[in-house]
View 1 (tube, one colour):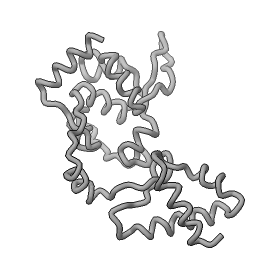
View 2 (cartoon, helix red, strand yellow; view 1 turned 90 degrees about the vertical axis):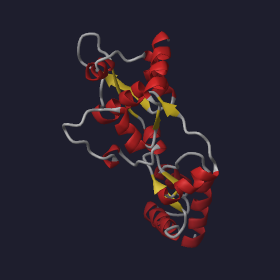
View 3 (spheres, helix red, strand yellow; view 1 turned 180 degrees about the horizontal axis):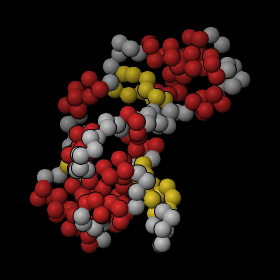
View 4 (cartoon, helix red, strand yellow; view 1 turned 45 degrees about the horizontal axis):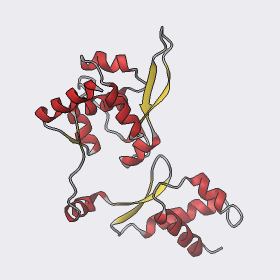
Length: 202
C-alpha cells in the first residue's frame, strides 16, 4: 500500500472516531498491509499535512485524534455560544489536589482543605471519568487512593500529567489553579457555597 493511501485510510478512521484511537489498535488493524514503522511514518506525514490547518492531529494519552488548534478555539466558542459548565470551589480544589498530589486519600484531601469532602464531589469526578480508585493505602482501614484517568488527560488535551505546569512548592491548591490550568469555569463564591451545601446533603 502506498504511503498516500495509508494516510487517507488513517485520516478517515481517526477523523470519524469520537474517541482517540490508540497506536496499538491501528497497528492491529493494518498489520496485514504495513509494519509499525511504516504506520508511524504515515502518521507523521499526516500530522505534517495539517501544519497549516485549523485542525491538528494530536497524540493524547489514549491515542490519536483530530482537534481544533488552540488559537482557533475562541472563534469556535464564539460561534457556538454555549455556556460552559461551572464547578463549585470545593469541586475544583478537590480535583486540583487529586491531579497534583495523586495518589491521595479522601482524608488527606480533607486535611489539606481543612473541611470535609462531600461524597457527591468524589462521585461527580468519577462519573465524569476524570478520577478513579487506583488502590488502597496501607494503613488501618485501607482507605481508597484516588488518581486521574486517561479520559481526564484526553479531555484536557494532555498526553501525560508531565505536561501540566509545575507548581511552586509554596503555592497552595485552589480552585483558581484548576481554572487557569485546565480551562474550567468556577462558580462565584455565593453560588459555590449553595452547591456545596446541596452536595453535603447527599
